[in-house]
Image (cartoon, rainbow, N blue to C red):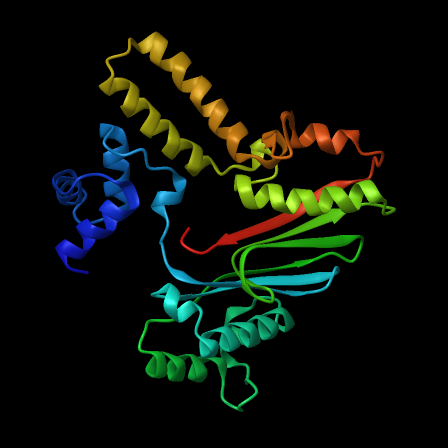
Length: 283
């Protein structure tokens, strides 16, 4: 990637000016993610965790049943290609194969498609035909023999092909209307609120440490005394954990409640959120 392309990408991700982006990239020795952090610390950018991820076009496909469901993203360079019939059909077939191999990428690449060629070969052929870079992105399979899997597609392009997909796994002893409604609403909540984990304790230490350093640098630049800065930092970290943990997030359907509150209201002591996966194109 050329210097100009890097600056353009950084500007697109952060909204910062050309001069600031160019300076941050030089300081970060060309590392885009580090440059985003530098802009955050300097207060030039309000970049969130979204902005540090790769932004691509493409589609997300969900395939399976209530006991086993897979989600996969296929990326391309432009939204125009993402709506191309060849790309749509390729993504759908890849998604079905992905579910059969439980998101094992090595197995997926070597599986044969309907035309007799492998996934890898068909990918090369599609790139040659369309003229854009196409890649197989994130994927995950959730299995749940004890209860049920719920799914949600947002910004649907066709069938189960969309720009954002969510798959969640709930465990319970006996189904009820309340649980069914909760499963559907929870998948929509996850689509909107983008939690990192189910519980606060599950956030990785390196993620917390990274956020701490950014907060400390921001407070240092504001000239806050050490004792006050430590208290503010602790509060910000606790807020970061709450905002990014599913159970402590404000419930999208009623922000006065937390997700945990809604879970507690359902008359089922066995109800448990086992797992979830959320994939949005461009994040």
